[in-house]
Image 1 (spheres, rainbow, N blue to C red):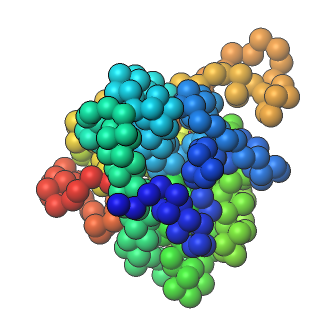
Image 2: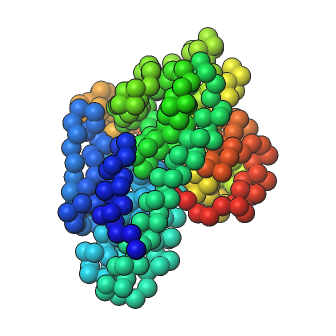
Length: 357
Ligand code: RUB
């Protein structure tokens, strides 16, 4: 049986940007709120700390919070010395942290499907499942990247929104950046426009950080500049991640994605989402049924704790929006690129895949 420590060591030997890892009997994770100005690493043995870190976006991105479903259950098993009731309670806690990204819920359920017995036996089962999920997730990023890179042509400028990269996944490139990183590694000459992504600035802070680290040429723009660039023929593809895809192909992603998709359609620019078959939620028929998380409006009226509007200004912060399937040229997955009509292509995909993070 492969142990967690062994797996983490093998990950550390690869060129990965790991968001979360386990070492010296503690779980460690990068504080994504402080990047790129500070590389702060939190360490804990308590699943409650992990749940809080997801809730307050210290760890974020649907792939990374998906793997937290595995890490959190593993931590709970260790912490409680194999107490099943505690592990089940931890599962409920983790699932309540963020409502839109479906991978977290699905991964917790997958972990709990092996949670039987108690003590060492329970811990061992959970450790095995954790290793399986983490290995699978990293392999997934390479498969997805290869499929998506086929959509990218030499000379393309690609627009992306928010951060769908290594730290939002398992360390290679997450979703959108796995496609971009693979195309770059294949020697294609590409340029990336990364949208800053108000109000949390995931694009400016984290996507730009990763693109710089991977040596991929890029330009930062504010979210409201994409239409101008597309209308001037400066963008050939849009590639974003997704927090949940409905059975009909509608997708929930970081707020602002929808307006990029509209601009892309109006200007004949293909709009893709890079995602996992696991992110497709067949229990949800259409995007309007996806719960959109609303965050604290103070995150809009201030920037890094400094007010940017008169005191008392009303603000609203839907954290995600829904892009309807008719705006989507393709849904890139680890099993290939799905195209319309999505209701049937996604159903066929469902029939052929094992679950993924
Ligand atoms: C992150 C976000 C990212 C998606 C998609 O939201 O919307 O664009 O997670 O990327 P938040 P991926 O910062 O609120 O977690 O599919 O790689 O997760």
